[in-house]
Image (cartoon, rainbow, N blue to C red; front, top):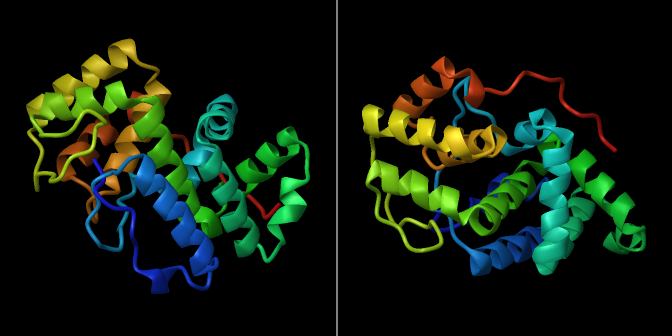
Length: 220
């Protein structure tokens, strides 16, 4: 789905050190790649950026995502702490010395904020690629998009077949946690500036694919 996680560094140099965000991006690219063109994403109203997904997903889902990274993708977990700490002008060692449960709580509070948008996106991308590979493969298969065994596609179409899209998503909702499907589709939308209109229409008419609006989290 995503070929590269590289972004225009100028967009983020005031949010976090380039050294840390580059390190996190490199680690994630080594573990799996979403398709991604070099663009500044424009979000339609029905499409949520990653930090808002963390705000609006179930608390147990958010906890499971960070716990998965700590247990299964340890280097990415540590790079996430470094990136967020640098963004907050903190020494990473201060967070690293905390008990694991406190580290996780701190990460969750921070990835719900706009300033951690890039880190939140990378966390969700990796979690989907590694923990939900089958979902990615089934979705792309249903749309007729070529991909490798990890769910990574070299090219994505400019438009999506509405009938194939609706049929595939309906099947996924039938045997997969709807929250995981919701998160995936919103992250997938981020791979094209403005998203795909066909997917926007499907999200807008399908309650299972929508997140309720919540206020933005306050700094932790």
